Image (cartoon, rainbow, N blue to C red; front, side, top):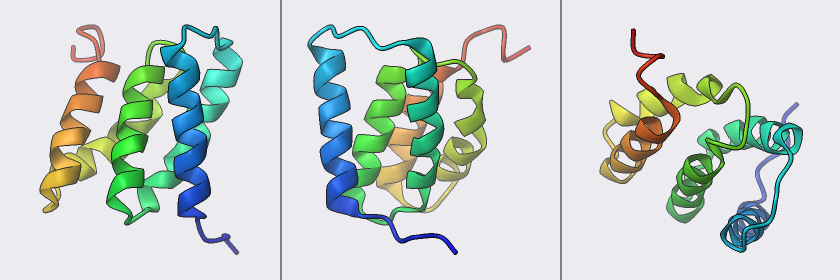
Length: 104
């Protein structure tokens, strides 16, 4: 049984992560990867601000984490969905996590 997301707490944590990255803090690859995988649950969130912060954090952590490709299906779903807010952010995040070698 999944616990419901605590939207305010999630937004607060994402804000802290983005602040650390913005301040130039070094985040270990394993920490970044674990955080990245934990963020995949946030695709369930309906809160627009939390979703925007999630996309921004995905973009910023894409170069720090391993196996970022795991979120491509969720991003693709949002990119082709009906919610314009999600679509634009998903496209930007997807562009950041993909490179030319993945597209071949």
